[in-house]
Image (cartoon, rainbow, N blue to C red; front, side, top):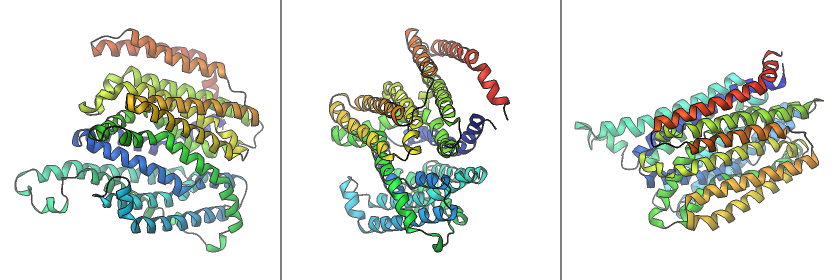
Length: 492
């Protein structure tokens, strides 16, 4: 099968659960932003931003290390067992520490009155960390159906419990004989945010239980020498991952601590809700990454691998450019998914969309240091990005609030993208089709700019203009890529 066709199929299969998870999470946003006020939603956004740091620390690059060593021909059972036991050991230590220091952790992040939040997230993180390697094994063995099924179970449990806790139980408690009765005593509705966390906890626990067949291992397959090699490869990725999370989520942490106390969490809530819309583009990016990472390594030994990598980036940019246009040209409709009180932040969406485009391109470019075992470069690039994120947020937030955070994010990812490209051309040169990439991305930006020139007070007119402009862009793409796409689709 044509490699690009195979990648497209794997992206669809592996990415479908992730896309649905994000879509359902996105569809929960209207519920969250209507059931919770901006301050409560800000707490939700802030806590998940903090947790994002910890999942990177808990997995410390072992998932990518697993793919790297698995593809290098090591005995599969030895690689799997070694990485799984390593995560099991470190995760156990983490859970014990969280339970012992719950009060101190809660106090340090400003939730001393809600220590149960810390325990919830301690176990969520543990279950997710232990699931990482079994899921990686399913991807490496191309067990797409089981991978998708387990992801879907997680999604459905999460969404069902959210609906029960946030809609059904409050409705029952507020009506007639049930008001203030036994149900309200068991599931009090004064603090609805906690039920979002509980839903996540239950879904993660059930997923781990369903992964028990994959969690079986033999201690005899564990290799301390192999673990040392894997850690040497993975630890720079930990630094890169940690710095990457700083780039992705630290702006929300800084918003909470740099803005006045009376508006901080509300501003975090508004920014977080608008960020939900801006990261629509990451639905595709995440799906693509699930399939692309093992695909990159599997193609490494092929003679035309660099040509494949170049084509991958071209079509990746084409797809995310179309997603960008669809989102921005129909923003008047998409913005309705968040509550009215949160829509004042819509001006950050285009900036954050562009930032995520740069991040997606960076992910593609980053293959050079993974394939050449120079993961330290990845850590250095991410660290530069983290430095830029912190400096620009500290500079811009006090004067510009969440708009400053949005610009800091774009500047960070753009610089990381440029640095990775320059270093990649030096250490692992790939002849990317920069003309096409510039045409597709630049054309999308031009179309969006033109749409702003035809602004009308009537939403219907704006949507009609947007539709016409989108069709012009798609027709241009069709004429340029028809022959190439036909060849890929019809190839075997």
